[in-house]
Each structure stands twice: as structure tokens, then as C-alpha cells.
Image (cartoon, rainbow, N blue to C red):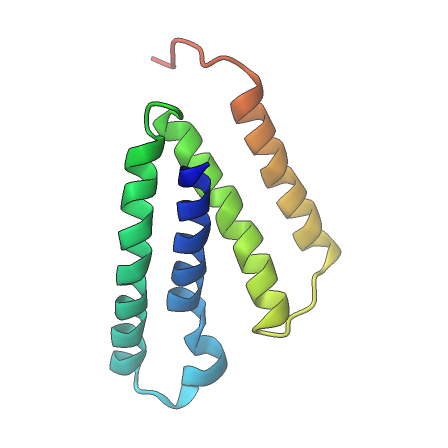
Length: 116
């Protein structure tokens, strides 16, 4: 559970680092947007690295990445609707449902021997 919580909060920071400047940073020069984003991203790394270290073993590397991506989309949906004031379209909702289906597939079956 610690892994999931740390990944969630790391994604909140990363979402603001990557997309937060879209709402208020248009007047900033690009170098300033990059610098502020990197400072925010540092906090993301301080959470994501421990999350992956704690989670590896309980989860495979593949599962950690799939969890990460599902959390990323969930956080971004909330961010886009509340912060960027964008509307959810049906195709975005279907895309999110397909990502959730990917999570189910990744966790519902035992990993095979691999490809190759």
C-alpha cells in the first residue's frame, strides 16, 4: 500500500511539473517553465524512487510500470477537469477504461516465462 500511496503523490507532483505551466505559465519564458518544472519534478523523484524500491519484489517491474501509468492517467483526469477546466469526452473515458482493463490483465494472470 505504501508503494501505491507514494506513486499517487509522485504523480501529483509530476502532473503539475509537466502540465501546470499550461494554465499560468504562458507569460513565462521557456527557461523559467523548465526550471520550475524541474524543481517540482525533484519532489516527484523523491517519492517515485522509494515507491519503486519498496514495491519491487511485491510487484514485478512490469506491474510497477502498469500501476504507475494507471495512476498517472487517473491523476491527470482529475487535474485536467479541476485545474485546466477541460471537459471529459467519451473517447477519453473509453481510453481510461481500456487502461484499467490493462491493469486487470496484468494482475489477473500469473506471469509466463516471457517472450524470446
